[in-house]
Amino acid sequence: MKKISIFLLLGTLSTLSLAAGNLNVRVGGDVKSKIGSLGSYSDGDTEDYGYEIGLEYMKPITERLELGIGLAYQKHAKVSGNKIERSELNGLIESEFSKGYNDFQGYDSIPVYLTGKYTLNNNWLIKPYLKASLGYSFNFGNEDLEYSDDVQHENELTDTDLGGEVFESYKLSTKIKNGLYYSAGLGLEYRSLSLETLYQVNNGKLSVGNKDYDADYEKISLILNYKI
Image (cartoon, rainbow, N blue to C red; front, side, top):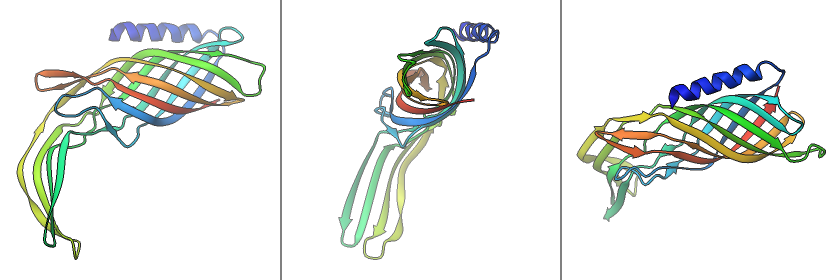
């Protein structure tokens, strides 16, 4: 699959290079994201937001249709680890108990893809269009899983940290595998600027020990596009 995707992309790039086109610079971020459930390690929720930067080369095929090729660097949001937290108050001493897996970086991606854009109306000042892409996601940057069972104490009156205890702590190594990338959405174009709303998916499998987990990263993104 990896070799087929690369040859397909190179062939399309060669075809597009025969005629003039447009180079587009793209920046954006996640509005909402999730990752596949990772068993006891995570329910698939994410923390904070991801972002991306990228380039696309687009060539007009007809009055309304453009085809092209693109790549991006995508910094995905962190994955929420499964953890149980509770607190106890004994006089002025508050104890915070924590047991489970910490938040971790599932992975980041560099997708390389073919893309198509269809303008719905060329006569309007602000032109609406549909967009879809398909390619290959090179995944990397995964972190080890960290498990901890500990307690931290604090004086509530003075906000003084009184230290704590660690009952158990260990790490599990992980490995992320590459997969398909695809997206679909719509946008609005005004002269050299356009704003897109995309549903994007990076396929990936996260190996923990001898077991693989489906770790597809799904997100809704807003992308600002500038045509050079």
